Length: 278
Image (cartoon, rainbow, N blue to C red):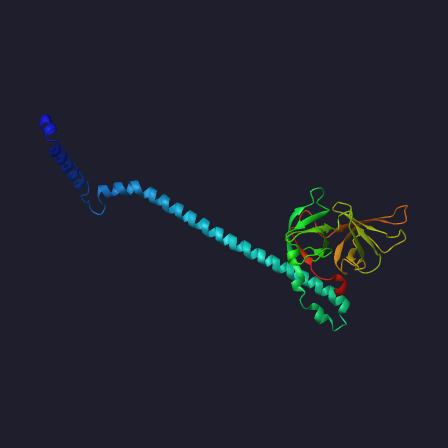
């Protein structure tokens, strides 16, 4: 028998295929509504794989969808932030203009084009020696920035001014907390005229207030006067933290600026000629 099959390999292969085919036919015989054994076998093998593939696809699709949703939300959030910042600055400038020109018809002409002179900028670096001295913004001469232009935070509080160096797409901002900075300030409700100086920390000092001055006190709000010819009047600068009487001619007054140098991310440059407008 084996010798016969060995001599006739083709016949042996044919018999094997017929036998295997009969087995496949037999296991596919339907058994009521339960399905064939072969169907059950295929289902048992591939069902987990199919389930896993579908789950993975759903997870990828959801993650992809969530990514675009978050990206769109981020874009809208940044757009709204810029719009709010722009509106705050316009409001600050308008209020300052009205304080000086509220009885003059020329105010209408001065108001035109103000929004075009507010440049939103992002902080891209700080002074490596001291973060309270200066920082760099991502706008420069291309946007019309020049030396001594005023820089505000998103609430309209004074931050500093543009100084050299200025390139086509970057500019340096000197903070009012810099020891070389000086701003003419006064109490918001009037009186106690002095100079706000930085000391390379988060706290400034108000200088040249006589020891006999009884008006200045803790909690007073300080604003710019415009007398220095750089900063326009009525911009909020900071709040008096402490007032100390010394044996010297002047009081020792500590002032907390309204901005935090370490938390600033965006600023607004006032691209206006202060001497002409204010």
